Length: 105
Image 1 (tube, rainbow, N blue to C red):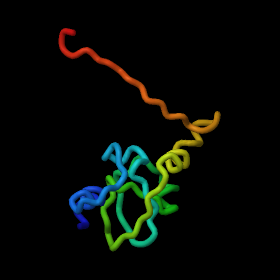
Image 2 (image 1 turned 90 degrees about the horizontal axis):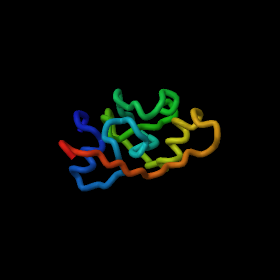
Image 3 (image 1 turned 180 degrees about the vertical axis):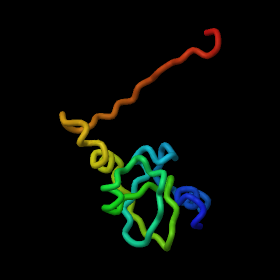
Image 4 (image 1 turned 30 degrees about the vertical axis):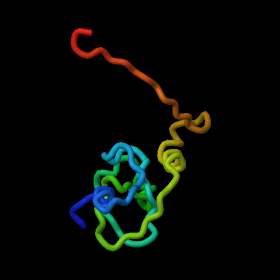
């Protein structure tokens, strides 16, 4: 369906694809387009350079033709996108916990 995000279409067909933010801001759902075309005007999580190299984000991508894609390693795409901003080496991801009081607590 050309009027529905690729991720939503896959989910409707019980196809499991990687995702996180659902807003085109991260690289969890990044794929490499092997054939076909899509439009992704809201794909803020990948640069114009990566788009030109065939990378796409399924959570905000609309197919414009039959499409064949290959899932990618999220950390690799993240490094391609944001690595130049981190000159000291690989990006380390840590899990943090933050407790916020609700109401009068």
